[in-house]
Image (cartoon, rainbow, N blue to C red; front, side, top):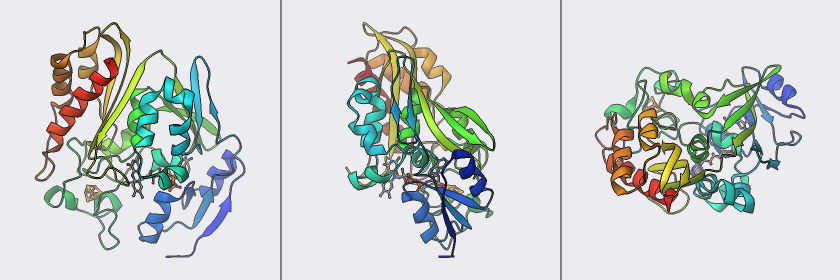
Length: 320
Ligand SMILES: Cc1cc2nc3c(=O)[nH]c(=O)nc-3n(C[C@H](O)[C@H](O)[C@H](O)COP(=O)(O)OP(=O)(O)OC[C@H]3O[C@@H](n4cnc5c(N)ncnc54)[C@H](O)[C@@H]3O)c2cc1C
Ligand code: SF4
């Protein structure tokens, strides 16, 4: 491990100034310390952002909730009112890693975490995502990889929270230089769709301050399938949100995780659900529409039927 400076920022502006181009933020440290220990990242400076004022607040309101970047994943699962208003988010948080990880991991760090592709994480391999010339997963071991990508890298975005927050139409408020910019969840990840080097759309000195979730009287749900019950990432996950009147859905969003470098959704599938009475056949048709462009690789075709089942179950859970 190479030596680096360690500083604690007291304001968002000083955090972004201190990070600059060669520094990195550290919050819970679960992801970034792993990358440093494995020599994947060699930052000159680590900027601790855990002391930023108000960054651990969860602020409810009738219009929108604000969740500070340093709220832990565990706190999302414990918050009784949040579980009632945004059950999909609490369920996604409850599936992150293990209790030890959830107690330390933060919302900002979870959203900004880097690829889990085993080639990317291997200290002796320099793949396309790290500036090399080859994606080793395409012709290699691609069991955990994406079904959709807009670029040669097929590493899926690993964040559970990103999937639930996309279904809930959340917005990230980001300190960029002297300004605060608002990024929808699709905007927060869109760069990773087209650019193999990107894990998300943030530059190294862009600091997530908080996420804002609109309150729209919608139900939400999250389900995932993993190989292990605990201490593991999902193979595929699904989150959905909609206003449910009787058995009819309005303003529905269905989002898939672990199948694309971004939280994956399609306007066509969402529009199909508008005003429909939800039953098995409707849920199956929505699943077909969402999966229409899936392009499996040698070892990950199992994700297609898995995603199909999860979409149906998540939608039915929403309406139950
Ligand atoms: C065994 C294991 C299982 C796991 N399973 C899951 C899982 O099922 N689902 C899941 O979602 N995750 C899972 N994870 C990943 C874990 O949840 C993330 O590593 C963690 O949430 C990162 O949060 P952190 O606060 O520790 O971030 P850090 O490691 O401190 O930071 C992560 C990245 O975010 C950047 N960053 C931190 N804060 C900010 C900010 N405010 N603004 C901008 N960038 C920032 C850092 O520079 C770094 O690049 C698992 C991890 C392990 C080890
Ligand atoms: S999927 Fe992406 S991260 Fe994995 S080997 Fe290919 S380029 Fe690298």
